[in-house]
Structure formats: structure tokens, C-alpha cells
Length: 217
Ligand code: URA
Image (cartoon, rainbow, N blue to C red; front, top):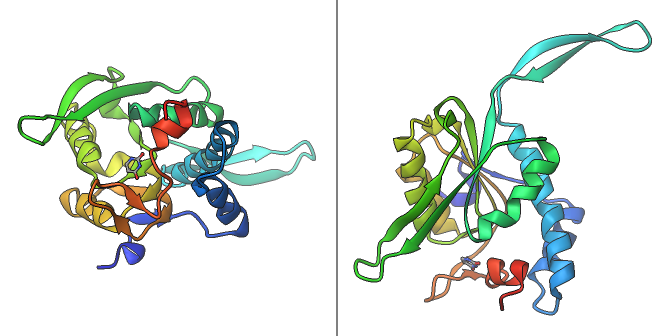
């Protein structure tokens, strides 16, 4: 199946606004302040979209006009989990939308001996098994770190169908590998790119997100 057609890979509406924001952050000439500002705007859109996948219950309120309004209220409790370091850039976007949201962190790096992703650190909310999890990492390249992180979440008791992986750009092969490995996972992304180079950077991509966001280029 093509990544763009996968029912569990949800792309933001491809509006002119989103295209304009993505054009700025993909431009190699964009300096750091602007990169952070416009990335934050895309992250906000992604988080808002992610919330669409949470369950709701019917709720009636009375408006100031004294008239009932049939609405909904969110039912599931959520938390964020950021994959360090780049995923930390997405934490504020989540906090801006969900006040006092709990945020766990996971550090996964490539083990030089085995070339496999290895867990170095994790700190998760104690009641994470009862929550929906927005997993935060801006770039989905091979998906190796994210898949390792999902294993950590599953071991902590999180239900797979309650994991929403939120990223700005994904490679088609990384997204498909993840969706195949985890048949209930949902991915929310802004754009699906063409592929990766030999160093596993996404093409056309935007370079190293963490370096550009945190100014460590
Ligand atoms: N991480 C990045 O920051 N950029 C890529 O292209 C791939 C992984």
C-alpha cells in the first residue's frame, strides 16, 4: 500500500497556509528564530489534529442566550511522550493546547555495537497505562527510535490503539514500517516526503530538525 493512502496515516489538510509554513522551515536560508517560530505553528496544527482522534461523549450546555447546545466533551485522559532530543521541541505545542498536561521523556540512541536502537532513559507518567499518548518526534525517517519507544510504551501498559505518533515530516518507508509493525498505531503528519538518503536523512526534508531548532548546527 502507498503511504499516502494508508488509513492510519493521517496527513494535515494540504492548505496554502500549511504549504507556506513548510516552505519556510524547509528553506536552507531560514535562520533559527524563524525556523522555531514557523515550526511551532506547524506543531500547533499537528497537536490540534491529534486531538481529533480522542474519544468524545455527547454533552449539552446552555448558551448565554438560554438555549441548549448539543456538543461534545473529551473523554480520554492524555499525556505526551517526547523522544529526546528533537521531540522536546514539540512539548510546548502540546502544553499550549492542553494545560498542565503530563509529559514523559524517552532517550533512544543507536547502539554502536549492534547498530540497533537502544533505550538509554525513560521517565513516564505513573498512570500512563490509563492514558492516550501523543508520541512526539518531528522527523520520522526509518522509524527505528519511534518503534523502540512504542515497545517501551507497550511494556508500560499503554494500549497500542491509544498511541498517536505526531511528526512534521515522514518518509514513506518509515511510516509504512511502523504501521506494519504496530497494526493499531495512528500516525499524524504534516507532509509525506519522497524517501531518504544513504545517511537516512529525509529527502527533500529539512535537514537535522534538532540542530536547526536548538541552534546546535
Ligand atoms: N532526523 C532529522 O532531524 N532529519 C532527518 O532528515 C531525519 C531524521
